Image (tube, rainbow, N blue to C red):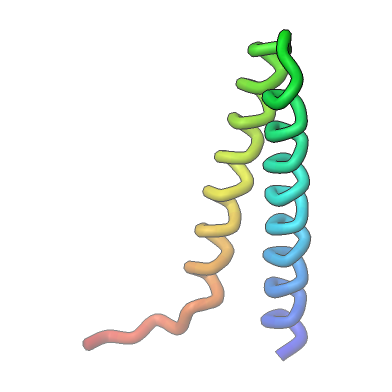
Length: 66
């Protein structure tokens, strides 16, 4: 049970970081001129976070054979 809670806590932390990156990207793009390279790096990190969240969700799902 504690393992599931640890997994959920990790997912929640990653989601919070994902939201923070989204806010940073939005703030950067609202005031031109903006640093396109920085935005690309933030988007790449955001995508990596999404992939990690998806992977962790898959770990938490029971292996059901239909």
